Length: 152
Ligand code: FES
Image (cartoon, rainbow, N blue to C red):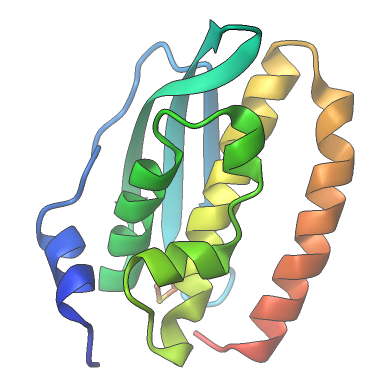
């Protein structure tokens, strides 16, 4: 499997690996075929009326691309508002790594799903669960399309 230098670099030196014991939201997602698992922890601070992701950590049991996409995903959402993080699609995760081999695109879906799941958990815990339903439905449709078009 050929990976570019950015992917190898994030795999070798993952950013924000670990966990946040008092996280505001935790999202755990797994891929049904390859079995890889990503867990993402986020901490939210309120700044100027916005919910900002002040801390993010991840733990991933998975392939090179799963670890690299988890790592870059933490960099993409750190310091972003929750709204901005929710708008990040898996293609943006893959692009930030300089692209993924087609057979590994589903790894970026996993990273994307972990962001969504962590935010959903935060929303649930902070009494905003309803707001997530629409976003999750939209994402499910997007992911189904992605998963169907790419194998593990
Ligand atoms: S997440 Fe399945 S092979 Fe990488």
